[in-house]
Image (cartoon, rainbow, N blue to C red; front, side, top):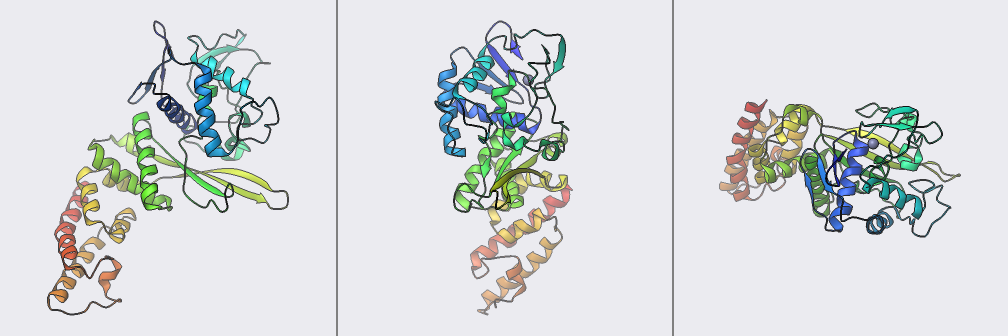
Length: 365
Ligand SMILES: [Zn+2]
């Protein structure tokens, strides 16, 4: 993991929890104005970093996001998101991450870290396994964690280099509403992909989109994010990458009202491969964006492509009606497809774009 000559660390994509941790850690570095390289992997120079600075920024973001503070804490954090941590224990974890050779412990058993894949010697007494120290997302981990793409089991070994990284996983999660009266039931999402740069991009787009649109339906938010990405980046992604783009949905729910018991549940969401591929096509994405009609967008996201032809027929019919100064009633079939159906210029634009959109989709399938 560490390059020998310089104190540079290279992080490789792994399971979603780790990927979220890396994206979170990168965000901490951004606030510190630390430069790093990011493509499929992330390469970070650690020379100018120290644990106090990193802790300060991490603490600021964490306090903001989770309404908990580890600053000055030496105990009393059993029920915190990262259980039983103190300012000192967190700083120690950061320090280990920054050291050239993080894993200095000697031991008789060699274990492979569930996240970075490196093998380290350890002893039974010092063995660190995944538990709620690394986030109460892992509470009842038997239930919530084994269904990850990489099939983790709850007794996985975690190396000391990865410990702090995992404790950054809460940072990139984006809240999508249901935050009834602060700090209550909440849904958050994280978009996971096999490349760090794509993961970072998609989550940024999703966050920006949410700021504008307040859309909290995961399917639509996900689809819009993919479209925005395709338009801005104009890059082609391989089939394997497209198949592995997923949304991690983290829900915090009240399971027992009287005992005020909360539980974090993890769900996964993805769109069918052919839909994702369509949304990531630059030209298609651009056409959808230009049409700017939510119902047309819905048809595509739900794979009802043949209805686009129908939609176009009704749009054309409405254009004629408007030209003949006829009124379009609220029950007119065009209302099933277009919201802005009384605007002749808009309808003309839609009718010029819809056939092209349909043809491009059919070609892609
Ligand atoms: Zn590791």
